[in-house]
Length: 55
Image (cartoon, rainbow, N blue to C red; front, side, top):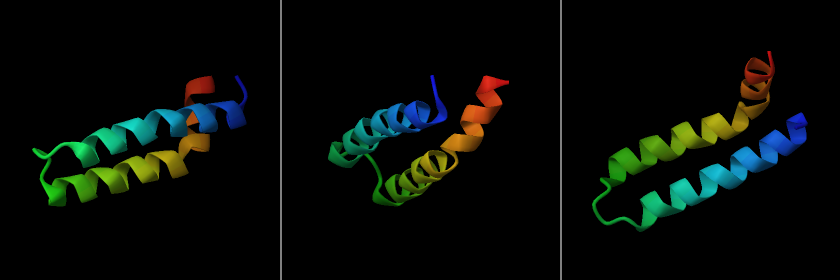
């Protein structure tokens, strides 16, 4: 798997998680915002994650 494939697949995995959280009425909006920021940071740093996993 190339870095670009990893980035695409990782993003495709994070989107449904974020969507499920957004649609769940039990999720606290403040916690949702924090978790959304964490997921977006994971997406941004996916090349670093790929490099760490590849080693």
